[in-house]
Length: 278
Image 1 (cartoon, rainbow, N blue to C red):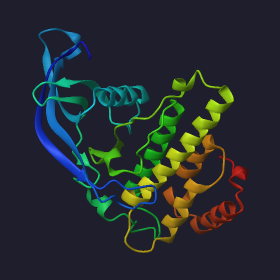
Image 2: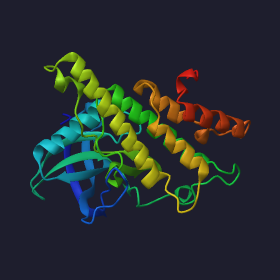
Image 3: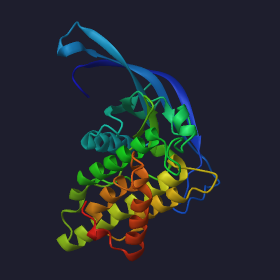
């Protein structure tokens, strides 16, 4: 724990109940519950004793100590604006649970949604998401790329439990998967293949998270369908996410948009994305 932290107040409990989904998007029958607390963190301002200040934070509880510790370590190590910052993990005697302290979030994805999230399609450019949603998807894709470059992957990017609202921004929470250096004792060629396979799998899970939760729609949305195909193309994994966040679906300008879509569709169908100069 940061030596400047004096104490914390765990605050009031809240429950988020959700149906986990499998990789095909089918909800499981049994629900899961995440308990989180809206509290405060007290610390010495500028590192000086006697100059106490405080801030609003959120605490998430866990049954297992290793789970809380691992999530804290992974989130701290990743350090990205779209990954919710973790402050510390500890055992809280008042609730008899292991907790991780995060920056304050207002709720998980179905909760506290801003207006632009309720009406995802742009009112000025038919077929595209509104500008706020475009920004969210681009930034999240860059965050997933950053997570992977840190040698970490996230095994639950298709679940609602992986996304929270923080000042009307969607942030990723509970980064929990293996680091690359855990496999140092394995055969190098085998390790590399396993890591590439894991990154590709988790990238596809991120695509499912967009499809099921962030770009969810009840009606037909052809441009969305075309965009989501990006997560199934066969290109080098290190270029894959850049293909995603530079896709025409996430462009602000309408100029030549239909021609760009036509070119992208042609390249996808022929598996020639390598010829794009990204």
